[in-house]
Image (cartoon, rainbow, N blue to C red; front, side, top):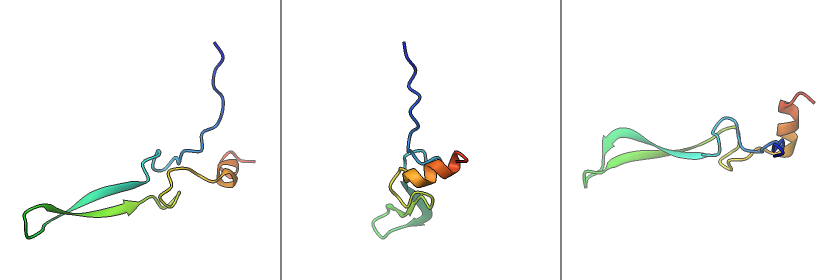
Length: 60
């Protein structure tokens, strides 16, 4: 069975999960938790890296 040797463009910093919600520890008036949405700085919230960035990370 052949191996798949294709390089993935998935962001190595966020591993394809570009946006996360982090609880701040505070609560809203209705009692739910306040959250802050944070996006990955490396891929700017897309989850994938541009091809030019992938080639530079390979040392080419």
